[in-house]
Length: 187
Picture 1 (cartoon, rainbow, N blue to C red):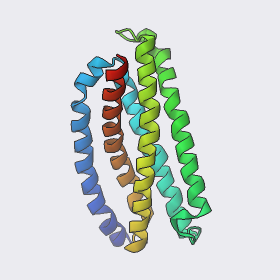
Picture 2 (cartoon, one colour; picture 1 turned 90 degrees about the vertical axis):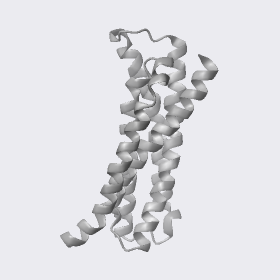
Picture 3 (cartoon, rainbow, N blue to C red; picture 1 turned 180 degrees about the vertical axis):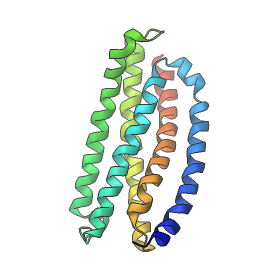
Picture 4 (tube, rainbow, N blue to C red; picture 1 turned 30 degrees about the horizontal axis):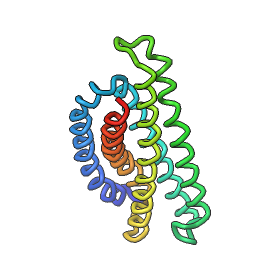
């Protein structure tokens, strides 16, 4: 691929990603009261955000490669796409359920106490956030691949940065919602 074309495709999306990263920072900064309500939640935030970016960026890359290889001839409802989506949801569910266990392991070194009730709320928030944001990002992945195909853009140039940025924002918004819901119900 020609370097000028790649730069032309990537640059506008990277600029939007900088704006999106700033928004994610503001969202995280606004969660201070939630972190006071649910001690320990802040510890799993980086892991959940990183997981979303890693899993869904890999999904975008796999679908971009499938497009280049001609495996998406059946469109975005092809067997390749559906299997990748199932894998994304399964991986999100599995990894999201591990975060509370790791929090339990390190809780002995924290300057505050993590009760069983708080750990259960964090587990609910972690799993619900992981799966919900995975569904959102699967839809965003569909849109990115469709957009790339329609406008003759290499999806590998745009899917990674866009999915990680949208993933950060969506994950934080979803986490805030579940933290308010589950924190209000159980704490």
